[in-house]
Each structure stands twice: as structure tokens, then as C-alpha cells.
Amino acid sequence: MSTPLSFHDERPSNRDEPYVYGTANRRDSGGGGGGSGAMKVALIVVALASLAGLVFSMTSSGDFIEHLDRQVHSIHCSLLPGAKAEVGESGCRTVMMSPYSSVMRTSMWGGIPIALLSVATFAYLIMRSLGMLLSKTTTRKETLFLIAATGLPSVMSIIFGSIAMNKLGAACTMCIGIYVSSAIASIAAIIAHVTAGPSDGSSSIGLWARWFGEGCVYVFTLVFFYVIFAPTSPKSAEGCGTLVQKEDPAGIFITMSKGAGVPGLAVLDPLCPACKGFDERIRTSGIDQRVALQTVLFPLDSTCNWMVKESLHPGACAVSEAMLCDKDGALEVLDWAFANQERLRTTAKTDEAAVRKEIETKFPKVKGCLGSAPIKNKVNKSLRFAVANALPLLTPQLFIGDRRVCDEDTDLGLEFTVEKMLAAQPAAAPSGRRR
Image (tube, rainbow, N blue to C red):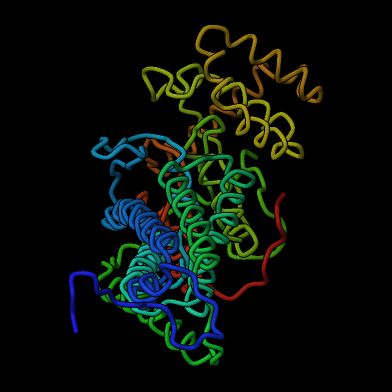
């Protein structure tokens, strides 16, 4: 019989079971809703961090894909939404043009960008974290997989961050955004695991294998469509012109890699920023092991180069003279010049004599030769070599055999182009590493 004073007695009928007031309501309302409130918040953070990583990865992938037309484009190098892309040298451009920005670079022009794999990974993490958030039963068996899944981009962030700082000496802001997003997602996944309910004790292998397979489908699907739609160009294999004058009667060539191999010739300016990046790509990709590479100096400095009206790279003539003065130590001079390019160019704008004095102090062997009439004549002959082969006024340039690598193929497409050109050359033993 119901009366105004009647009530529902939620105490257990079993007198031996201890009772705590309010536990029945908590079991009814929270037991099947996907876990504790703290776990849900952590899963939401995982999803949001993955969304941020997805945006950064898509932006980076978009910049990479835009360069597949082999032209120069601007690059997004700001974490601020809506910030304009930048043209010119930057840490983002240095990282993107490096051999570490993509895989399978010898199999297709530019290779498959790492950022594209990151897009697939973060998209999967969003799906998986939201799936756990909406699930009626999310236990530590599921969240342990999420820790492993978010750990993948975190580990890769550590690896690629170390490469960028230690090998490239550059920082990519889009990459930093990915690194931070990965770290936040990993921390949130750990919190979700700690606050999740206990596992039911069943085996996790089958579930984890299925989820891992789903992640692979995300990656392989995106890579498949990228590969089939990536543009190709026959010019990469054919090259853009040939080398008319191959001999070096004036002794102006400098050996860059020793040993037998397909002959190659690089046209460099020691104070050219693009040449520095080109040199790094040559060495990092191992091309200098496969090509018997020599270089001819082409300083874009009006001090010695009559073909340029104003100096694009002030001080380049002085460094070129030093390299030709001591050809055995030329690579050491070149490495020093690459490492100090900006400072040397700035100084040479107002005081080239100071640059020459610094060179003589750093490399005593060139003293007495630097600035002399014979060495200036040698630099002039190096420039005459460029004229004889109708070379354009730009650096760097690369010849494999007697074929010139197209200018648009000297950055992202370098490995692919060289691979195609080497395949058309007679087989030869690999050359030794130059430095």
C-alpha cells in the first residue's frame, strides 16, 4: 500500500552485504556509460589533440603535394590559423626539401611524404578515441591499445625532431605542431587508461589485431590514392640539355667523391644557400657514393663574374679562389663556407678584404695565392667553362654523365631523377664517400 510516507528502500535484502548510501544510483547511472568522467575528458583531449595534429599534417602534406608540379611555391611556416604561406628560405622549406621528408624517393618523384602517413595516423586516432568515448564499455583493455597507437606518432616525433635539429640544423613549425599534438595525445591516452575500468580478463590479441588492421587500412588507402594520382614527367629521365665541353685542360675541376663511378659534375657557388641544401641532399641520399662527382665553381659575385650586374652572393669570389688555391683542402673550405654563409655574405657586402683576411687565417695554405693574378685567371676560366657550355646564371646545377638534371629536379625529385639517369649509364663500381 502506497502512502505519502512510503519510499523505495534501496538497501540490499542480504543483511550480510555492507551498504553505502548512494551507491545504487551511481551503479545505475555510471556503470554502462563508457567509464568515469575523468576518462571521458581524457578521451576528448586525445581526439582534439589528434585533430590538431591532423590539421598540421594536412597543411604540411598540401605544401609538399603543391611542389609536385616541379615549380617553386610558398610554404606554410606558422602555427597561427590563416597565416600566409612564405616564399624563400625557411626552416620549413629546409626540412621539406631534405631526404628525410619522404620515403621511396628513388621509386617516384618526391617520394611519399611522411606528413601524408601522419594524416592517416591522426585520422585513425580521432576515430578510435571517439569510438571509445561513445562505447558503453571502455576498459583498460581498450585504452592500453590507445596508448600504443598514440605512442607511434610520439616516437616518430622524437626521431624526426632529432634529425631536424642534429642533421639539418633547422626547425619546422608545422612539424613542431605535430610533435606537440602527439605528446598531448599520448599523455591524455595514459590518463584515460589509468582512469578506465578494469579489463574483463579476456584476451586482447584479437581485438588489438583487428584495430591495428583498421589503422593499416587508413594508411594504405591514402598512400594508394596518392601514388596513382601523383604526376609524372618524362623530362626527369631525359634531362634538360647536355654538357658540350667535358674536358678540363685548365685544371678547374675539384674532386668531390673519389673512386670509380658514373661521372658527374656539379656547378656550385660556395655562398649560395640553395647549394648548401643541394650538397646536403647529395651526401644524405648517398648519391656521392654512386657518382664520381666533380665540381666547377660558378660564383654569382660581380667582383669576379662579369655576367652578373650586382653580387647575389658577395664574397663568393674570394671563397672560390681559396678552393682553387688548395684543391686538396677545397672540401674543407667549402664546408666552412657553407657553415658560415650568411655571416660571410653580410661581411663581404661592405668589406670583402675582411673576408679574405679571415680565409687566410683559417686556411694558411692559401696565403700568397689568394687574390693573385694566376688564381683570379683560374676563376675566370671556371666562368668561361660555364659560357662554353651555355649554362644558365643559376646555381646549383648537376650533370650525370653528359646530361643536365633539370633545375626543377634538383630538390624533391633529385633521388628519383638521378636513379633514372644512372639506370641509362653503363654499370660502374660505387664511389667512396667524399666527407
